[in-house]
Length: 402
Image (cartoon, rainbow, N blue to C red; front, top):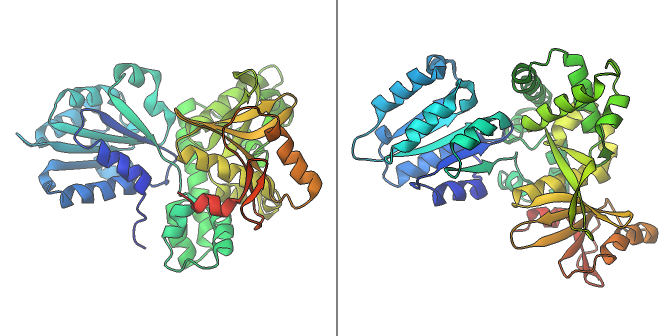
């Protein structure tokens, strides 16, 4: 299978090429960070960059195990720099190097170095690194494939509904498409490998967690309750095997670790009238619905309303928004999407064909008195419906739009 060109991410790398700033690409394992770097390196070659000017190290590769010592890494890289030319250095999964930030800082000082690093854990941008490199890096937050990127892998663009079901069921990870084309049964082993690697390497080892059983139950609870308001107390009350005196801190620690590993994303609540951020009853979303199917079984597919909500949440992140759960009086707006220029309100529902469901989705949006755009996203196919300025759009059409 040809590599899927992740144009949104690639364009950022092209725009910041040769700029005196470190490019930091973060995201869950297997979401495509290494492939993105490979595609960008091909672009550099097309631009006339010589092979000797490109240094690429993947620290998940045992061949580079010796270079996980930061001093040896620095000496190795220093010896490879090309005199009087720009050297492009790519350090993949650099969190495997102890105190890597000191090597990164030393390399950054050299104006003939253009530096790109990736990591599968939020510890990559821990307070120490962020403090050391303040103002000297940009973070590119990478997710698995959007549905639009997923569709770009197929020459046949027909039967979109079936492809959307496969996108949900068989994962949005790039390699999932290749494995599905060989044999859909392979997907389960692939997802199991991702799931266990993240839990063992990115969560348990880094956080010093020893009870895998409880960690799995916390993960399962969050994945089973996507789109539901959740608190540490509600999680601990539903998880067996926790000592009640320490359950709150334990659960909080586990949830934070899952967020840091990009397995789970947290959406905080926002009071639309009061214009203030709320600190309770946040919601959690899964990085990939395929992993959710893998963990919870086929029955998880019945919860299609919350699955669509999860997909819309991730898509809004991809489009560069900060995303909140909206509160308007005692009602809820599924998403308040904000960036520097815009605020957009979204309701997400499987269908609004029934009058009472339509009214339920419209009511909170009608209570908002500003002039920002308001949308209802559903699987219905009655397109271009407008309710006093609130537009109803088919969610698949929205996912495939620019």
